[in-house]
View 1 (cartoon, rainbow, N blue to C red):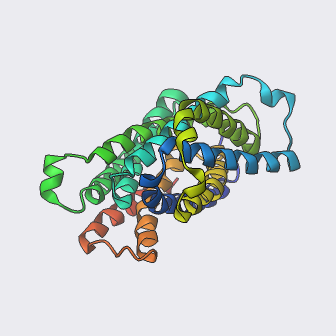
View 2 (tube, one colour; view 1 turned 90 degrees about the vertical axis):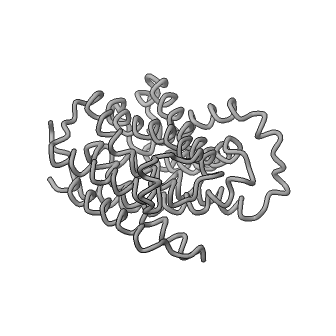
Length: 294
């Protein structure tokens, strides 16, 4: 396989991606009970597609070839719409740190989809790192409670979000497989626009029933953050990194998300985790280092 060009650019993009995604869990857990997931995400997709659309107009523009096979954008937009709706459905009951730990299981699934779709090989060292990270994620999800791990009973919110993470893991290798030379901006815009249409259709009832004028300020702050930083920015970063790195390495950066969420929660005055929980974070960071080695 041809070696990706400028791989360090992809690493930098995914490092920033992990920071921004971490914030979406902390803010999202606050707003989730105050607005339906469909209404919230339709709004964020609308704002994000507007931002990316302006950048496309000012930058590369849309070529005739970019409009070929529009089903690609519909498929990718649908996968991300599923992921985000289920994420906020899960955050209604799942603590943000626990939900972010579930998110770190996506590299295992992404590696499997990467092999199925792109025949990207997972070496023995990468497989060991993925298993190590999964153990670390489980440790965080169950808050270092050995008895809870043995019982292995995920909360309802974590189970719902797990389904969304499967959609996210499938999305990553599909970007590389379905891209036909479109720029990351154009590809992101097509995906966002398609996701918006899907959410408008799916969530029409919720959108119309939402009391937009009386929503609490924190909901609008969350929507703006999600639209600008956790949608427009992260979608572009993910698209860019996927074109420069293998799927497993792209998704490896999700291992940093729980660490960022812990810091986000602490900065928002929600306290710090028990020291034992940090052992799981250490494991996933070790796994990240292993996965990023050539």
